[in-house]
Length: 377
Ligand SMILES: [Zn+2]
Image 1 (cartoon, rainbow, N blue to C red):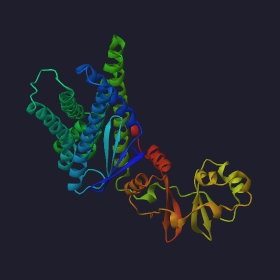
Image 2 (image 1 turned 180 degrees about the vertical axis):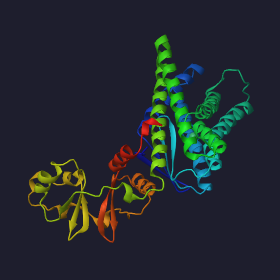
Image 3 (image 1 turned 45 degrees about the vertical axis):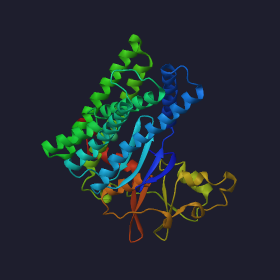
Image 4 (image 1 turned 90 degrees about the vertical axis):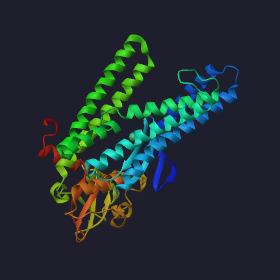
């Protein structure tokens, strides 16, 4: 998940918001305002709304603390953490590179729900100190804020411990299976399959509740199930992908007959004779057999149509000096990590400045289709 709004960095980790977060923030503020209104009808709108917004911000802080817990433990185990993104259903920590052992996987996963649990009980404890007795309704907005934050964080911990990969509970499950079977790939596949099963149960339960009149609660559950199903499918695919690519160099997978064009070609000719003719989306620009740059439909868009005849491919290509390139013996997994980290779709494969081929997501998919039966395992 890519953050659209960057908030800054904590401990070297960039913190960001996805647009969908605003939707949930507005929903939380609205429901809180309604809740506070019912607790203390005598309070003015201004007070109710400020209480709702302060509570929302504290909740945001608690979510961030949950993700920071994952990230800091991951860092302590030597893994790189790129970013934390908050979105409609919580947060995600982008931890680079694969889990190396069951032990670290277990602690990185479980520390998030533990953090939420501690935060939740701390709020309830503060409420207790100020005279709240369990089972009793909150008497004033201050108490309502504390109780809401207490319960929501405990619920967050419980929800995240549902054993469906990639939820935290699914990661804990994976670590336990890994520890028992001593097989990293099998444990991840199993946990992702349990995740899909859990997601199906959510969707069914949600649709059932919706059909018997629980309205939005039911739909919300079905929506979370649908999201979880998508996420666990992706993780399953990711695991199989990693299994197939492990130990393979880029040279095994790259496209060797990458289409090339001469630099002096005009854009006009390039578009008509190359781009619109064959299905390729990316062309290598060569000069004397050496790669001088890449040209994709993206570069074409930057030039006005009237100037196509006068502009050469050389003039608008992305020059090789600005390109990320790899060697034929680069491990395929490492190349894939570079592509996702830098958000690029293809990497030219160079050997002594000569273009050997092109490594792209599409060729990985082709490779998988030709060499593996993804769905039959
Ligand atoms: Zn978590």
